[in-house]
Image (tube, rainbow, N blue to C red):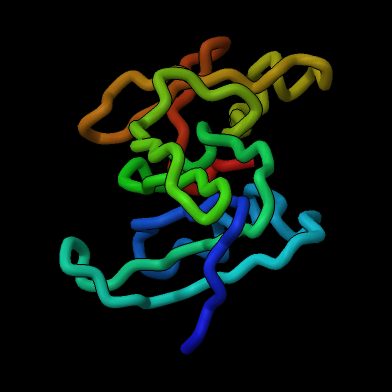
Length: 143
């Protein structure tokens, strides 16, 4: 397999195997006009297998979404074919409009203008709770 090197862009690395397409959807990468390479099930010394996404353009990406989906991801910023920044992610302490509250009595269900805001309440178990109604989110609640 031959994937060209990136002159200016982003490499999202150390994605748990099988999560690349989920990240592609949630970052809305289909709207990006530049080439994007999705490499699935690469060998990884640390994880056994991993996915990688290469974006050949410097774009804004939502690090909250990446950290929520997979906090072990690294984001590499490439300029002039050189690594200029490496971001290590963590679970975000607060999420805004990443998770949707499923409680039908929550104010976010009745008022469309209100942001869906969740706070991390248990880092070990990856539990987030709505700041308005305290409902617990599941990992699959991502909006």
